[in-house]
Image (tube, rainbow, N blue to C red; front, side, top):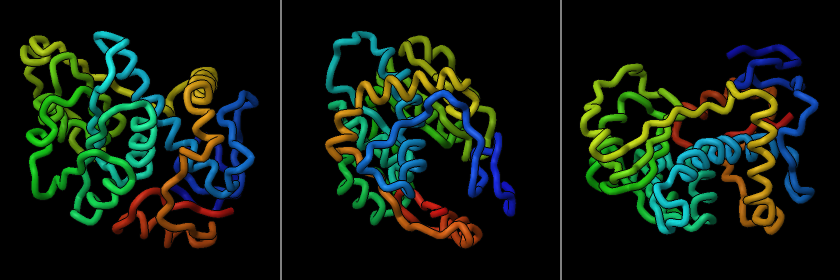
Length: 245
């Protein structure tokens, strides 16, 4: 992370007033969307779509309906985005969060089940879930696999838990026909990102236009207060923290 530069190139996490971008379309913002929330809004949703579309497309029966998704960090920007998109797709959504207050807000946002991971074992509460979206990584992987149903898929989109390695029982994975999928939006080519945008708009464009997809924003800071915004991110918040240029 760095500060002070007026431009940002190949540093996706760095706040800046300007950024270099490919001439290929990455995102399409409806006219009704405020400029200050467009980037954060669509990045979270495109990341969610890139992660979940691959897992959901690997259903044993593509015509099956009523699958369930467990989302770790249900109160995060990506977590709230996944909840919205999965509910629009007709899926049952379970989330984890770190307090009763956050669990309540996740339920208000549309989650069907909210699990306080500080008090409950999510592997027990979410047993039989079909898809898990995990940004914690190795630290959660064994419990993810224990919770997954037969033919279940876990999509790893981060390693915030710190651990890089997990001792997996491959026999259990094979017997339950489980899949472990890695997904990262940042490392994709411009062509791949453009394809994700196109598929996202094809599937959810009408929902965007109708206002059924709205960002969850905790607070908005002017870019001059970027340090304060980062301190806020380390504290308790729900949804995205946005920098206004």
